[in-house]
Amino acid sequence: MSEGPVPGIERVLFTEEQIDQRIREVAAEISRDYQGKTVKLIGVLKGSVFFLTALARRIEIPVKIDFLGISSFSNRSGAPGVVRIAKDLDDAIEGDDVLMVEDIVDTGLTLRYLLQTLSGRGPNSLAVCTFLDRNSRRIVQPPVRYRCFEIPDRFVVGFGLDYNQLYRNLNYVAVMERKRS
Ligand code: IMP
Image 1: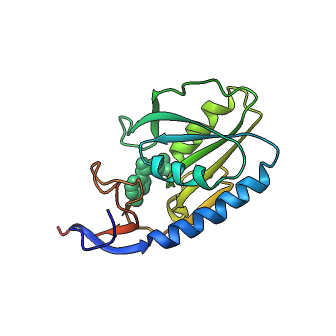
Image 2: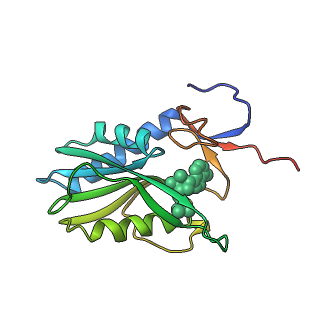
């Protein structure tokens, strides 16, 4: 979906052009940093799919891709960040140069869990690239090497990010309207 009035959307935060430009810059950085290697991009379903494919197409070194599916839920006391792997990677990552590709790092709890899990599988290197970073809500600080955009403390949708599974197909990132109570 391209830009135009969409119900529930308050304002556009990043346009398609801004996103494309920033992805080119980050892809160039990755291509430089991993020169001479094959980088394995690991996406977390479903949010990161749009970003991962856009990024992969701009990277100028050999790329492999794989995906993880997770479900996250609160524990009995209501604390967030309980994560479980619902769909594992297709292939082993031992000896690989792995770059985890995230849609957004918010509290950091999901990423911390994933990094702990993957680092136990013997990759040659393990780093993180996120499309959006909402640093203001961090509970834990897992290392993030590449980020496209820092965002304010508002719920956002588009370019893979959803609200109730909707809005993923927006070509831009937008702030949702606040719910009226
Ligand atoms: P964390 O464990 O709090 O860092 O959770 C990150 C996950 O929460 C992301 O991968 C998203 O699936 C989801 N999420 C967090 N903030 C937003 C948002 O503003 N819009 C859509 N999804 C979000």
